[in-house]
Image (cartoon, rainbow, N blue to C red):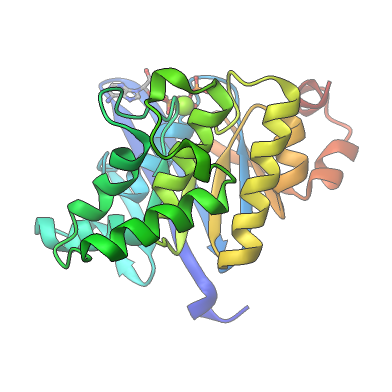
Length: 246
Ligand SMILES: Nc1ncnc2c1ncn2[C@@H]1O[C@H](COP(=O)(O)OP(=O)(O)OP(=O)(O)O)[C@@H](O)[C@H]1O
Ligand SMILES: [Mg+2]
C-alpha cells in the first residue's frame, strides 16, 4: 500500500509511568478507511496508546506520525487543535455535559473552532450529526432524560460533528446491553463507509470486534503479540487468545 494511505504510523513506541512499563515498543499502522480493533486485557495500555495519538499523553520513545505529521513536533495549541479537529476521540465512558442539552453538547466543539460557523450553519450541522445517529428527536433533551445507548449515540454524534478523518473509539459499547451494543457497532461501521473514516476501536466486546473490524491487533506484555482478521484470530490455536473468544 502507498505511504500516503497510512494515516497513523507508530514505531517502537514506549511509555512508562515510574517503574510501570506500559508500552514496550508498539508498532502500528492504520490505513485510510480501515477499522482496526485493538484487544487486550484490562490495564495493558490500550487507552494510554490512543491518548498518545492525540498527545494527551507524551510517549517516552518511538515514532508517532498522524496524518503525515510528527505528533512530537506539534507544540503550539493551534497546531495541536488542528490535529484534534481531524482526529475524533470517543472517550471511555464517553460522558456528555450533564448541564447542557443535546443541542448544546453538539454545538460545543463547533463553538470552539477558530473559524466558528454561523448560527444557521451550526444548527444544520447539529441536525446532520443527529440524523447520522438516528436521534434528531432528542435535540432538546437533557442527558439525564436519555438512555445509556442514546447517550453513546449522542457522544458519537458529538465526535463526528467536526468531520474527523480518524476516530479513536475507546470501549464504545461498554455498559450497554447486547442489542444496543450491536446497534452502536453497526453505526461505527456505517460511519466508516459513509464518511470514509479511518478508526481504531478498543473493545472487549467480541461482537463489536466482529462487526466493526477489518483487522485486529492484540496487546500482550506491552507489545502487539497477534494480528489478523477476526476469523484468523479466532482460528488460532492459542489458549491465551482463545479466552477472548469464549
Ligand atoms: N496518567 C497516568 N499516570 C500513571 N499511570 C497511568 C496513567 N494512565 C495510565 N496509567 C497506567 O497505565 C496502565 C495502562 O492503563 P490503560 O488505561 O491504558 O489500560 P487499558 O488497557 O485501557 O485498560 P482498561 O481495559 O481497563 O480500560 C495501567 O497500569 C494504569 O494504571
Ligand atoms: Mg482503557
